[in-house]
Image (cartoon, rainbow, N blue to C red; front, side, top):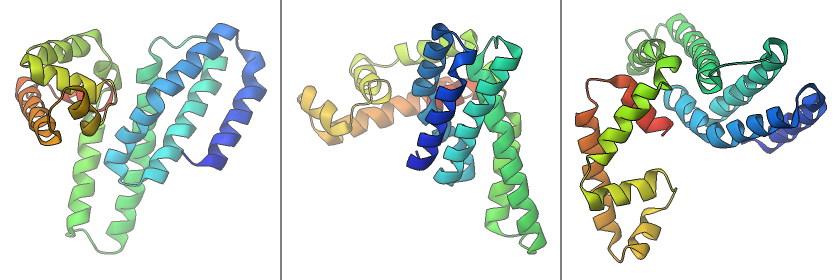
Length: 206
C-alpha cells in the first residue's frame, strides 16, 4: 500500500469516525484488515498494475464508508465492496481498450487479452461469490483432499505460512510441500470446474 495514501486514508477515517458507533468502527477496521490485500490481489489479476489496483481498492473502501453513512446498513459489505471494485476495474480496462483501439492495436495480443479480462470480469457476480453455497462448496472440496495434502494446503493458503516454514514444521522438504500444493490445486480445480464462482472464491477470498 502506498504510504502517503495510507496516511491520508487513516486521517479521513479518523475525521469521519464521529458518524459511526464504536461497533461500526470495529467492523469497518476488521473488514479492511481481512479483505484489503485480497481485493488488491483480485483487482491486480485483471489490471496487471498493482499501484492502480491499490488505488481502486482504497477508493472503493472510501466509497463504502461514505455510503454506509448515507444508507445506514449494507447487508453484504464484502459483495458491495467487490461490486464497486469490479466496476472501477471495468472502467479502467475499457479506457485502456479505447486507447489500444485508437492506436490500431486491435489485433495485438494484449488487446485480445484485455477483451478476455473484460469478459470474465463482467461475468463475475459478487453477491453469488460471497454466498453460503459457494463457501460450502469450497469447504467440501478442501475436505475431500488427502489428509497430508489438506494440512499443507491449509497451512499455506489460510495460515499464510511459506513453503519453507511448512517444510520445517512438518519435517519434510520444500519440494515435497510444492508437490502437495500442486496436487491440491489440481484436485480442487477439477472438483470445482463447473462452478466458476467457487473457483474465484477459493483463489481470492477463502
